[in-house]
Image 1 (cartoon, helix red, strand yellow):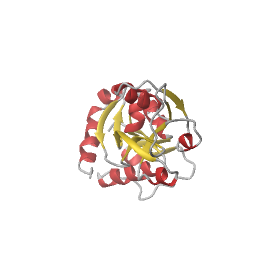
Image 2 (cartoon, one colour; image 1 turned 180 degrees about the horizontal axis):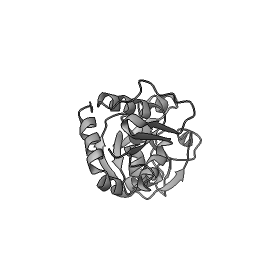
Image 3 (tube, rainbow, N blue to C red; image 1 turned 60 degrees about the vertical axis):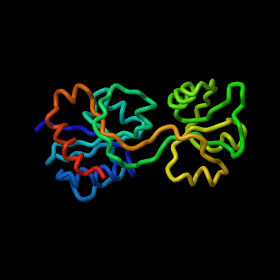
Length: 207
């Protein structure tokens, strides 16, 4: 049996995906002692987990330090890495939307869009024929329209509560997001049997 290295985001996605792997029949410990560990070895299954920031998972997979990974569709759309997308796990479902203050129109001359997804935002607005200026932010995106930094924001929406609490409304739904199983192209060829077995088993657990 060929060993597999799986890159996973820490937190909720790891927990949900870990339960799916258990449901798929992988012999994994009931609970994983998370502490501050960045790597977890499961010798019985010849599986190693690399715990990473969500944005780093496709990087590890593309460069082959992980054979496969679990990454949000938002990260895959933003980064356009050279990886194979194998399966939609349908976990951590949400979507990317544009939002802003109610009853406001966008500035006619180069409206400003604040986002941590500059590529997704640029591609979307280009696609609808809007020339925009992208302002890249990493946190508290909702603040941008409130302080006059941007006309709109482009961000992940889960329940919409954060938008509501900050007096913003949704304008356009841009893309659906869920966690995807991805593979390094070389690993996919070299370990195809092992990876295909994992995909087949996980498919049965997708709800």
